[in-house]
Image (cartoon, rainbow, N blue to C red; front, side, top):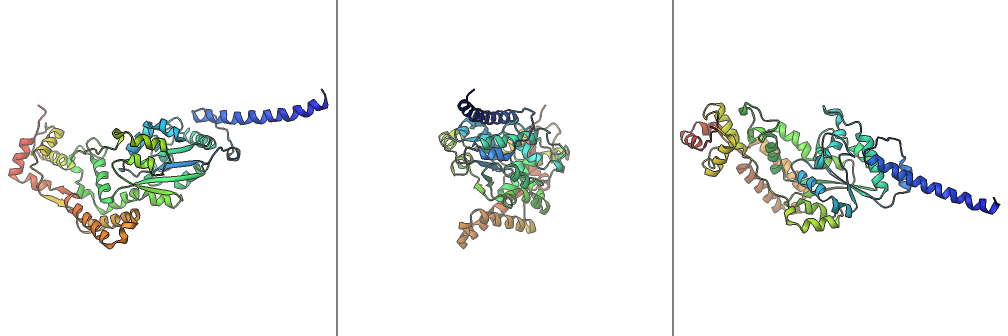
Length: 394
């Protein structure tokens, strides 16, 4: 072997070794992202030196009852368009746990607070999500992740920031809904038929007005203000206004930088958010209490009877109790500060502040109310109409 040939061979072999090394890293990480149980450490230094482009992680944090499920189903449905926009949405293989499909992001929220829950974090969760984030960031892809469970107490926001460190930029996205609309929607979710909070002795579950007490307002305000807690840790926190087309707003208003997904959502009217009419818990509660007190037979079909009450409309002007006093003041205080934070330009004009207060007062007197069950059950005329509306199962 000549000296010239040796001089040519050595650098060539070295170059081939480097190429093989890079390919092995990519192959190794790809295997880990699809659930392989290899948990060897790959340093961020190696990944960062070979990162292909600037990367962005977009984390949607809810809170609850702000169209989170609508967004999550859209992200799952629009996966092909999001891929065109260079976004990668994690699957339940990469974030293992009890939550699946469009709710898979809740596994992350759960593991960020697992010490405060009864269900343990899946032992595969951290190795898989860490290696996946390392890999997709190294490949120059962006991350999209959503879970309203990130609004919960004890979520370790600082640890989330550490996990997302491989990305050049992290954007937190929350959705705003007026507090006087949001809090009743939480109540309806908690006490709808079939929920875990409903008792067999139905008189035990509270009316909306009974539930809107200082303790519950304080507890759920913490969830409502999740964006403020994330601002303490992350620099880029965006709050969108909840509307009927939250999906297009999310894709198109530069929060996601997703032109293909944006165009698809704008071009498909059937993808718009639908407003689901909830079960009337006031009437449901009335019928349950009437059965419990033997004012109606025990074989009454509650759902069908509630439907008849709504159709006949004889309880529309029935006696009601509405929030007042200290509860009303607290709800207005939270509403005022949240609206001012979301729409500071509106509060530059004092007349707008007066208008928002008038709107709140109107809602407090007309919607933050519950029918007076005792008054109805003691009114012979209303009880006669209620018995006529009852549907039995026999």
